[in-house]
Image (tube, one colour):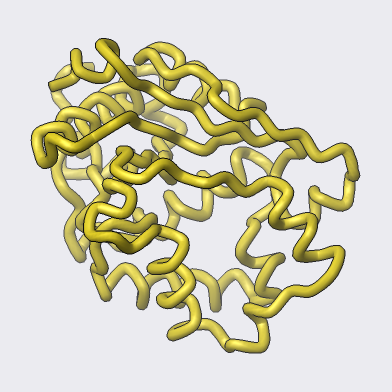
Length: 225
């Protein structure tokens, strides 16, 4: 399948991008992290995502223009986001928290004790000046056609050509999401940090008990320029 195009996301793609964020988070399970962490209905979460995406704030996981979409015969069939971490000194975590504070009831953003421990147990520190890949999804009927791999490669090329300061590329994923995991391995990523939380209580907030930060660097990364 070579007759699909890769382009930057636009406002008309927001519904697909919202769907991408949710489906990527679920990773073929029924668990949507943000819905459970913030204790909000799914429809409310969708509306929050729409509002945040329309803000189009750069260099965070909710940056609409940071998404590339795959289009086939005028239909969007896949999407993936990327940004350069702390390009201008502000981290994804800081930008994301500020956006959430604006659009989510502040009382729902506060977690304490055991809940906070569980959530933090599967979080990672992103590397400054790294390419971050997040929230990838391809419609089921268009999978196994190389679209996700092409989206990854297109993002790497795009960000490498934007900055000469890139030190590596990273992606935080569930290794149990075999298709995404293998796609990253295919383009040269390796596991940098692997975290497993043995308590089943973590499954209230995350799709799986294991998360990994995968990384691509050196000559393998440079080859995508």
